Image (cartoon, rainbow, N blue to C red; front, top):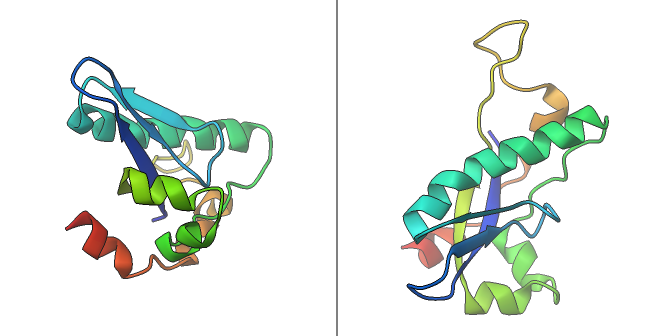
Amino acid sequence: MAHYIAIIEDAGPDCAVGIWFPDLPGCTSAGDDIDEALRNAPEALELYAESFEAEGKPLPRPRTLTGLKADPEIADDIKNYMVALIDFPLVPTQQNESHHRSDRLHIATSVPISGDLASILA
């Protein structure tokens, strides 16, 4: 199963909590609080993947937290916001309910997540 790192932006109690995925431009989720936003995030990933699959494009590989921290466009967001590791949801195919999405979408699972994520999430 692939895992994508999400950036969580919490602007306070009077605003929705936003989630976005640096490796998936345009893939966003939200909720009234952090817990709801995190519960909604896998569905956002699923819908994003479905749009890529419909267009015949491969889903971008997830980077490690170390890789994202090294990206100057993302580094400040990693420092300033919370991050979470979101599982790419398992979705049954029409051929067999027990199978996952096509291998093309699961190719990203071979990319390891850096150990420093555990220290941030702890």
